[in-house]
Image (cartoon, rainbow, N blue to C red; front, top):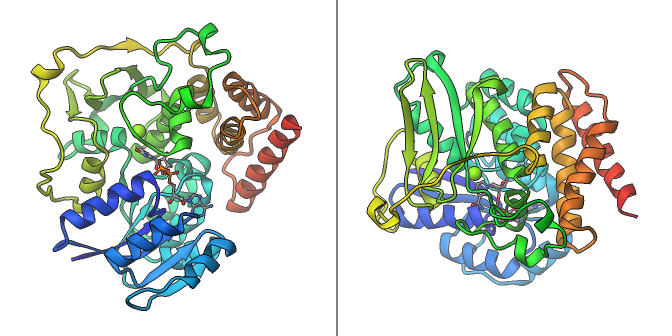
Length: 383
Ligand code: NAD
Ligand code: MG
């Protein structure tokens, strides 16, 4: 039996993780959970899974939670400190980080210090402070298991292989909600249109990141840290069906790909059951004849500027990806609340990157200061 701490239980990855825990009640148990604001959903999860520790995102939500009555008693907490309390909850073996944004960084580091296996969906953690997370995982000898479908695919392709014999990684990209539009056609697109992803149903932030292609940019940086490869060995390929989840080319030019119907529960389950594979009847079998045709195209850097920003920031390194991530989080929130247009997301990120002088090998303190400063700068652009 593996005991799980789930950070971000009410979100898209959170819910799908709960599906897996439910499907394998004899293998997994929810020991601790956190959620942001959705008390109703959290209450349902609590009664169904009976975790021993529950943390709410803020005081108001916490008060609402405390007013409810439950059929059993459990420990509670609130705010960022409680995210850490959950992450280090003694009974948990695995921490599934399904938070959105760089708020996921400190709980991940603390969980590593407590020797918890990390199943990481929260890519912003690796983007903002990849070197610190990696060094920490190495120091405490803790596995970092990818949940993101592309990284899970690469991880699966690499089982039994020698990482020194990798020629390159090919990360596939669906292209998001606007994959078939020209730049001109992106002027004036609405929030509703941007939130309408063709292949995946996900949280709002990652859906917008997919539409701008920043999601793929963040994934390139995530892959750089997870698989220890330079950016020159990480390519992006447009593949609109999301059937090939990613591929690895080896020195002998042999390419191994991982395929499947698009269902995030499959990579989530693999991270939880690794190194085993468990049956999962609910996922749909891949019938290639039904799909008939798989399409591929090059990712155009002019069209998808966020992808370019991510490669450039990643190559500069240090605090540059921290700024990329913080500016993106703020700009996406501003777009979602109707304060800026879709294309202004790119402009804001570009301005934030241009003004920043990267600090090489930053400390955690420096990362936090740079993150705050980039967010403050974006706010000045919005007023
Ligand atoms: P989501 O918005 O649906 O869920 C986020 C969860 O985190 C919610 O439970 C929310 O309440 C909680 N949360 C957010 N901010 C918080 C805060 N400040 N304090 C406490 N809790 C907070 O997001 P998601 O789509 O599930 O994505 C989660 C992460 O997984 C992201 O990093 C995303 O890029 C990555 N990811 C998601 C998918 C997907 O299919 N949804 C796929 C690959 C990777
Ligand atoms: Mg992905």
